[in-house]
Image (cartoon, rainbow, N blue to C red):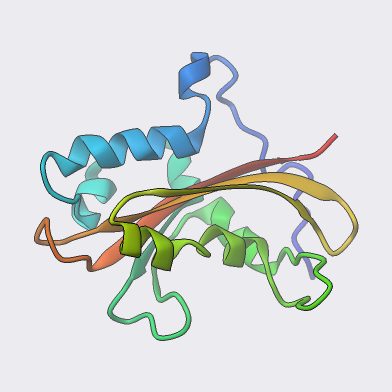
Length: 157
């Protein structure tokens, strides 16, 4: 059964200042704060006070990822995106989760966070405004060992 996403992207952040309303922006700010002259580690990201953003967080072990992401963490709400499929003319097996982690290789190659903003069509015809950011992590501050990021979105009008 496919997840009902009608309320999945509801967020209690309406009282947050405008600059703080985007989970992707908050994640990049956290990544930069933890970096401090190197690259942040997964343990630094885990230790951060992420609040409700933790539900939308993912982390992947790069060494164990061979063709597919090897998740070491998948937030509760983000996990539900694994069975929300997109309508694509060539591949109907793509999920919103696949889109969320689609820029892992690019963020590792760039050595910096990569933001994806898109309007996606779901398999049931609804459209979703979608944002995801992925960023490289390094246990030793230098060599990339993991990637992490967050997702946000809302159903289009």
